[in-house]
Length: 466
Image (cartoon, rainbow, N blue to C red; front, side):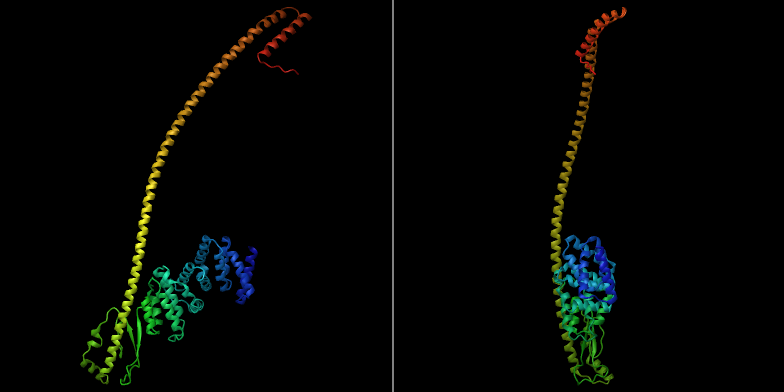
C-alpha cells in the first residue's frame, strides 16, 4: 500500500502543477484510489488524496469501492465522506457533485443523502445564496443534462428541511441564466419546478433564502411564478400588465407591475391578495364621480373601456386565484391523506410493537419465575451437597480412625508374636555369652543367628544378599 500511496502523491502533485492528468494517469489514479478506499485502514488517506486529484476521479473511485464492499462498509464509506471536513470546502463540494452524479444510477438512497449534505453546505444550512462558481458547476453536471430528474422525489420521504435545501439549491442553479432572459431555459425551469412539486414534502425556505429567490423569480413569466408558488417556494407573484390600447394616453408609464400579496396599487393596474381581496378599495369600490374627478385632475378623460378592461382582468385574476386555491386545496388534501395513511400505518405498527412488547414482558416474567425456581433448586442442591460432604468426611474420619486402631492392634500382635518366637533364641544367646567363646560355641551361635533371620523372613522382613 505504501507504493500505491507514493504513486498517488506523485499524481496529486502532478495534477496540482498542470491542473489536469492525461487519460492513462487518470485511470491509474482511479484504480489506486479504489484499492485504498476498499481498505478500512486506508479509507481516510484515500479521501484525503481524492481532494487533491482531479474531481472526475472522485466519483468513479468512490462508486467502484462502494459497489465492491459489503453493506456495513458501504455505510462506513459514505459516513466518512460526510464527516470529512475536506468535503465542506470548495474543492470538496466540486467532488461531491461528481460523486452524486455517479451514484444517481447506483443508489438513490446514497444519492439523496449526499445531495442533502451538498445542498446544506453550499446554502449555509438554508441561510445564504451559494457562490456562483459552485452553483454553476452543479447546474452543468446535474441540471442541464437532466441527471437530477432521475431522483424520484415522489417516492422518497424527506424532511421539510431536506426538501428546502434541495429546492433552494436547484432554484439558484436555474437562476444562472441571464437576468430576465430565460430563453431556452423556460422549459428546463418549468420541468424542474414540476419535479420539485412531485415531492410529498413542502419546503420551508428561510426568510433570507426566500427573499433571494423572489428577487430572481419576479423576472420570470407569471406561469413560472405560479408554479413556484404552488410548490411553496415563493409567496409573492409579480404580474406584468400591458396598457389596454392606443385610445388611452398614459404618459407616466408604458406598463406597470402588480404585486400579489402586498396590496399596493400602481396605475394603470390594481392589485389583490391571495388570502384577502379587498374589493371596496379596488375598482368596484370607486364611484364614477370619484373616477371622473381623478382623471380630470390628471388631465386625462374618463374612459369606461379602460375600466371594463380592468374589470375583465380583475375577474380573470380572481378565477386564476380560485383555480390556484382549489389546486392547493387538493394538494393539501392529498398530503393530508398521505399523512393519515402514514399515521394509520404507524399506529398499526405501534399496536404490533406493543403486542410484541407485552409478549416479551410475559416471557420475561416467565423466565424470571423459572430462574427463581432454578435458583431455589440450586440452593437446595448446594445444601444437600454440603450435607453429603460433611457426612462423607465424618465417614472418612471414622474409617481412618478404625484403620489406625486396627493397624495399632496388628502391629502390637505382630510385635508380641515375633518376640515370643525369638525369646528362646535370646535366652540361648545369653547363656552362650556367659561362657568363653570356642569354635563349637561360635558354630552354635551362627546356627542360632540363621534361625533368627529365618523367623524374621517368615514374618515378612526381607533381607538382601550382597
